[in-house]
Length: 419
Image (cartoon, rainbow, N blue to C red; front, side, top):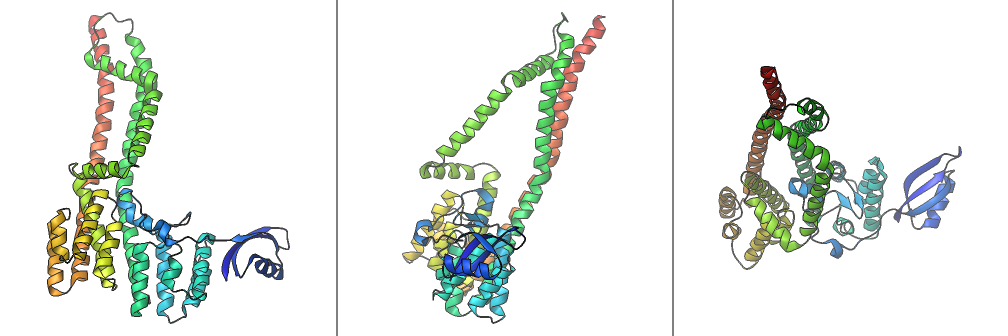
């Protein structure tokens, strides 16, 4: 059976939409008529995709790179929150002892979003056809990425699917919580900065020109600050829109430039060398890499496969290339810690903890502990930056307003002295 989305008219002539299972479109229309509905449109809810076409695909956008990998499906985008909720429901239902098809049916019934319901029903239909849960999820590679499917496969093979799904749910919830903390910390300072720029621009464009008119007939030499203010005001009035267009063109040009993988690799390497920001980016990538690797190894995924998947979730191309080199070196027989130390892109503390984990047979525990340390360091650094950004923005706004006021008052004082 497959999932079909439909539009139909009820007995009152009201249009209703939903998702229903059936063998084909004709059978679905018959089911709708039996329910007292008049079908208007019936179509397959989810298009199947082969994993080979999207294998290795990933997001390349900053701290949220890992999160976006969990939230997309064949043109249907699911949030991290939705994916976390679905995973938590699956984990609870599997651990309750229900058969897998009933688990998926119950999870679909609990979903209020038609896109999610359709996707889950499509997975269920493939499971009923004899595929494993991993194979069924592989037809939705942008919803269930390599990390997700590898853990589910390990859970199915070892007979611990419920606990593995529970770990996945905790992982996605932790990722969402970290993302929300970052966004929450950045929201107020960014709003304050944008408002500051807007206020200063408005003063320059609408207030300053009217006040400057008072000095046009003044024969005395204007102070340098007043001349600078007049120049800035005239520039905004005459070239403001052109400047915005040039900036937009530069942004588009940079985006086109970065579509080339070689250029993107150079750009990401350069980002790592920027003071403070580069170290912040490196810490975020190390936390993502170690947490993913630790979670996979703990779930029973072979170390070599775990290294390959962990490298794919990295968003900085330069560090991602280093992660792939680690996987290649381990495949050739080198230890994980030695391979990581050789590429020289991961924090020394992480390398040391991996070496300790390899020695005492607790690699997953050491990796997860290192990830926790990296995340705490990242949050502390972000909090420090945001706490500095807020007063700096206030000082910037106060400085600009003070400059405008003094540039206007100085010639007024000179005019009074002349009088």
